Length: 77
View 1 (cartoon, rainbow, N blue to C red):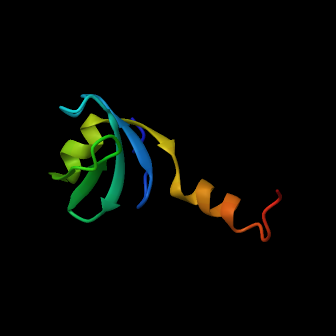
View 2: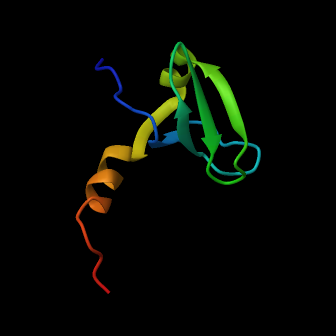
């Protein structure tokens, strides 16, 4: 099984919903433990990396993609 790739600032889809009903989380800290913030209610949780990797389904929006879109210079109106 291949290792899941994710980075700081990514929005990920988790297996279980947060009590507020949202299952989208933003990665806000990485290390041995990973801190994720609920997109729905902004509550943050610190969980071990192994548990995070087990419960993460996929990356919905990558932080690298949003940086590429914003660095294009002037905005069109």
